[in-house]
Image (cartoon, rainbow, N blue to C red; front, side, top):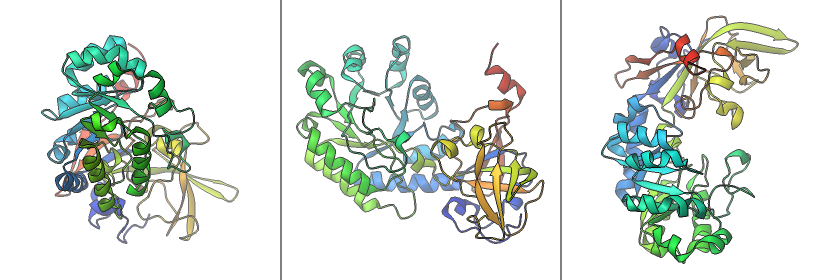
Length: 403
């Protein structure tokens, strides 16, 4: 594939105009490549928000949990957010001396004592869980929170990611609060948590915060902190940072509390790639498909779950460039399709392709369906040298399935 022209999209800014062939031609594929310089750039943006407002910002590990790069992000962050025991332990071990927050829709009784060893802040999802696990957590000196549901949907087209959808299991509505929250349970709380956004700007936060104020204004003055959750696309070019900071100051001044943000994507946005190669070209009627050595289903599952079409270096929209091609994976799943793209020239077997924005929701979600090997993991350092971090083999596939 001809990629001699510079790629100007933000998701490839970390390449500094150098071609994937020059940087990654010698890498075995498929391979994830983490971009150290872009991680630092994201960290600087987030730290600026924290410095100007006094809020505290956490890394949501559900989006990015490549702990080899935690030392790059740690100077800019106040800690990590976890979705359970394993992530809490990872944050405590790999970002020591920082805060560890955890939220889980339901905690396992047999794990809770161990969780208390790692977490500083523990957020519950229901009054029932708060009643069961809140007292021992409080006795252990932990900060206790409860997730609320402001019943304010601001998403379109991504219902699977909408915690405010009708009948949602996530968070306590005001009606549930009124029915189930006794004075004793409320007295256990140090803070409240809401998480309603997904890849959204500060205007959606502003709308949501208004709904939070409308439903929980009488409760919040008794709290020490309020966690705005994640989904804030803070490091995306064009994101309205002044409006975000206005929202933070509004909450601080109105309720006199500490504000937390726990972005995941924003920490690693545009900070990773997935290198792949063309294995075969298949023609069926008018559809030309390039079969790659990487799989949407296995290696970038959000492509199918979200769904979305990942950015690809040097490629255009279907029909934009002379040669339109569908890109698919090598698995038996008929729907293992990455997307439709166009190229300046026909693809050939062995061509190197580079997908962008592959640091987030990839390595933490991938799988070995069909016996697919997990992609290697490398890092592109600021001097543009590439270092291999991890290579996976048959043993990694087998050990996940039995003894």
